[in-house]
Image 1 (spheres, rainbow, N blue to C red):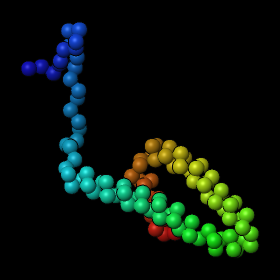
Image 2 (spheres, rainbow, N blue to C red):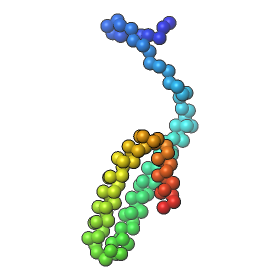
Image 3 (cartoon, rainbow, N blue to C red):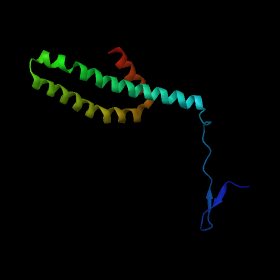
Image 4 (cartoon, helix red, strand yellow):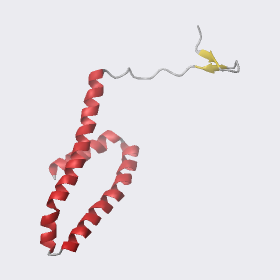
Length: 108
């Protein structure tokens, strides 16, 4: 046996290298998925909190048009922050940024 396989034209091709880590167990996969879903739940909860507080915010601004500005500011901030946060997490590690975001949300 060798570590090469034949291409359709007969030329040898190197076999794919073995992964450096063992495959994840079912329990590890479920744990990872639950953690990611909890993070998504926090994002949905954040939007629900903002939507519920919108009437109080508009009353404090004494203007119904202010409600539209608050909504717009929230969405623009979220739109700008998402790709920046994604790029920083690509550079420095997703797990660190994910845990940092959950910590900030919990503290807030």
